[in-house]
Amino acid sequence: AQKITQTQPGMFVQEKEAVTLDCTYDTSDPSYGLFWYKQPSSGEMIFLIYQGSYDQQNATEGRYSLNFQKARKSANLVISASQLGDSAMYFCAMREGHYGNNRLAFGKGNQVVVIP
Amino acid sequence: DTAVSQTPKYLVTQMGNDKSIKCEQNLGHDTMYWYKQDSKKFLKIMFSYNNKELIINETVPNRFSPKSPDKAHLNLHINSLELGDSAVYFCASSASKTYEQYFGPGTRLTVT
Image (tube, rainbow over the protein chains, first blue to last red):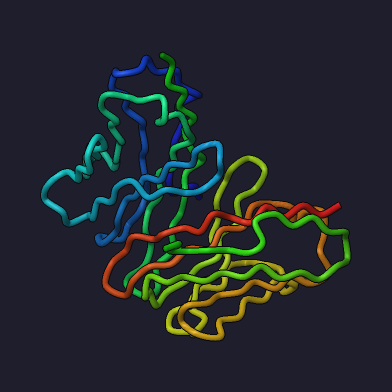
């Protein structure tokens, strides 16, 4: 069963505007974590942001923030003030397991194109 | 000052051959992983090693054999390559008390 769901089609975003990427997840483990990774056309996977299930505050990293709604099992990524360099695939992932024995289960990704 | 490196970046080979992909991290992490990204961009874990011990071994054909000579290295050997093995293979690593995984640049394997 798919544990991470990203269903938005490819998105076009105007430069300098904010964009929200949806991610829902499914787990029965009370301890888990959600990640967002960026994959530009060059192919590397870039870690953006992490939210632990017990974290009280929503995670933020510069222009990236994670809108964590635990009851709804959603972990949406918000990118503020989009830049042309934000054009990429964005993957939501969930940590399963604990230190030294954890794996990431990935969603299918969201394609974002930022237009000037 | 590369954090997680993989060699080669591109690998083109014929069916039936045996090939290896190497991964090294200089972050001092003690857990390393191999992920496979298919043609539809879907990423799936294959293996993980913690302190040179195999921890995760997903349903992967036994033609794939990981080897970790030390904590900083995790290599992937593939025997009898098949067309369906064509993909991008990513190595990643994480520290023992954190969950963030840092990925290498990927190795694009093409089997002809």
